[in-house]
Length: 278
Image 1 (cartoon, rainbow, N blue to C red):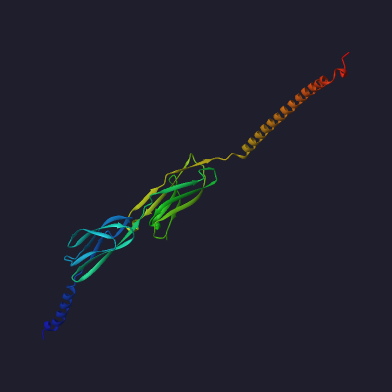
Image 2 (image 1 turned 180 degrees about the vertical axis):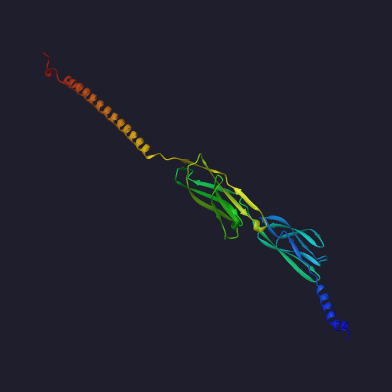
């Protein structure tokens, strides 16, 4: 038997296996964008595509409102509108009897539009404490929010909300600080930062109106003693002068009342009882 005859059967079997394996069609399904962050009640376009040259069918599955904008044999473009909650979109294509899918997660957000800062009190003595409070109206997702309290450009405090419930919520943070010596009034502000990069979005920032803290130096103890002493002396002199005026007026009144009283009594006596002067 020739060498060809010895190797013919294995070679034929190997060729059959290779040919049968290569007959299976391999393709991919793509979706763009891969992640998507949308403001509540917003709309976005989504593309579904495939590497299959002649797909048998394809489409997009979602419970959201969708509209087919444009299409070609290997891709489709949809407009997703009125997005009010987080959702998953599924693109699919069938090729040579095989169906593949690709999913896209949509995250709904509400940006920090209203940021307010409050100082309690707004005027303090040097070295005393005061409270800084920052509040932000409904934000979503709250776990992606960071509140930063600023004194000028200096960061005083950061507050995150990791683990917060996935629903629009008000955010707030409070910080107690000490009044320090500065060259002028102190400006405070609050920055709200919503980081959506992990969800396919950007960083959205909003800053409150600046608030001014008035800081004054308390009066020294020695000066306070001098002031109290001077006020006490002036008060004593004032009271003393009032008493002296009262005593003098009473003394003069008694003198006048005594003289006129004797003369009036003498005039009321009958003539027979009056003693005529010698």
